[in-house]
Length: 226
Image 1 (cartoon, rainbow, N blue to C red):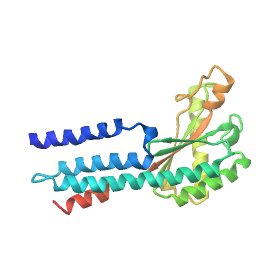
Image 2: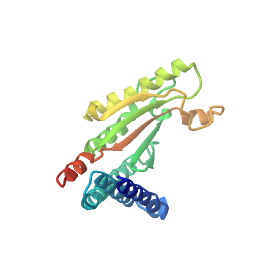
Image 3: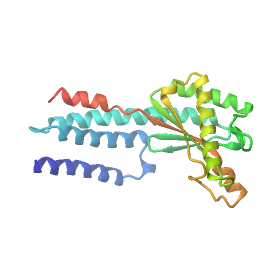
């Protein structure tokens, strides 16, 4: 039991060493996913073994393959989104394996309204097409406001705006089971609400694309060697 714990801690430590050895700029997202997936798979494989290190090796291989596949999948989606969203006013940020699209209200909604601007439909149509193509992601839609108005009003407005985006994407064929909408009101500002520019940045809808994990496949592979 003690030996198993020591080995598990050693494998966990390898994750930190592997990532600290190279900065984020030196590693592609696919390479980062390979390292994380490989070490995680090894930890899971070893933690289920009472006899030898076979499962740790198998888990590491499976985890590395899964991590690399996820990273590559999100790399391709990010590249396509950047090409298609260029010039639309939508900002795209990569956060690990997640992709975050930030939509300012200046291009999505009129002041204090939750109905989408008609001129934004074409952009959402293009986005919806890409989301359908890359269907191995969950889609989190979050509404945000500035600090003008009451907390209750801003909270409801943010929820309504997130739901408007979700409803429109659903009308374009994106399955509702992949999407969930939520509102944060004025509670998560990204800029100073004391300036007009800051308030404009805070009024936004963010769509976060989260890759579906392949944990089931890893568990099935491990069970074959139990």
